[in-house]
Image (cartoon, rainbow, N blue to C red):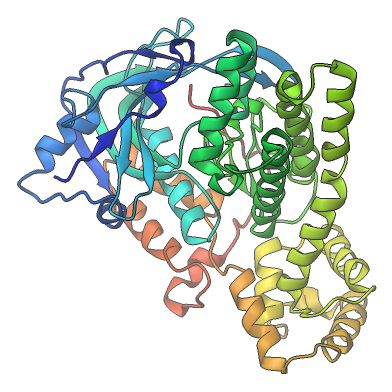
Length: 482
């Protein structure tokens, strides 16, 4: 099948992981398999080998060369530190692909580990299908993300608020090293071993820094840059992660851990869907500030390596971290310029974009469709655009586009690349998941995945997938699935 598993993470100090084998399941059956991703990974699967593959990715057998481990980490959850770790996930190894890149192959829902904290180590079919759909949608939107190789039904029940069908997700990531991993390493490793761990992360994810004269500060700056880019990309498409704890921030700069995430329909910066985020800590508009907070936690872990004098170390870290707010503001303004086809920089750009967002909020306008309508100049069919405030804004925006230094067509080309037509609409995701789990009908999941493969292309055959729910998102809630 093409397995080429290596285990560089397992060469790190033992406190960072524990060795464990997946717990076998009754009846592993592949429900979804990502053939395109498999090809990227150098794996192959046919109808004849699918049963064998389901056994491996369900946890009953191991792929050749697998040396499974569970990773230890801590995390600030809603601002409070906790000892965590892979409580229901097991890393099989790192698949080495022909171009030399390596990807973690992890089974999620594969049984109890030493970090399970009295949990059952299992996952529901519903939540694993959901992660598959959303993570693959994010990939096709062009946003850095972990990906999903397969969902394997286990043939066993999983008990949450009710009885559910169990499943195991095969997750693929640049790595599963988190800010929370640094929290754990700084607390449990001697300084020399912690420094070796940091050098491992640099070599794996930031090789351009291997010759740096100041690798600690440069790693902090590089991660801050990636996180600012990532959050701006989330907000570009209306994505709300829902649980931005430090254990859910990847040091590789990927979106990780699709629990109570969702996509915003009507624009409002205070939009929250997560059932556990009762205070709105992780609301759509709060995501930049939370990334800043998480990065400050990351910087705190680095203090012993920055300077033996703690006060000087704090000053060095603070000097970098304080730049995040302005860094993100620049990236978000640049993102809004792309969404509005403003190809050069003018002082009025931020105010013009903010005025549109304010209009959208006041009129409960759909975030995705408003930008698509601007891109395609389709206003006549929607009475909302006859509003005097919008007409005034639209006239000013058209005048602004005249100041671009490139032909008019280039502005709309940039807008088409920045504004998705199709996102995983919450009601459509739920409809597909209910059909799959309650009705044993995967056809809606397959169709939704097909639509989300080409999110930037207008397609009249998919018009129903553009529409928000008739009643809006009133009462819609998402859950962690643990």
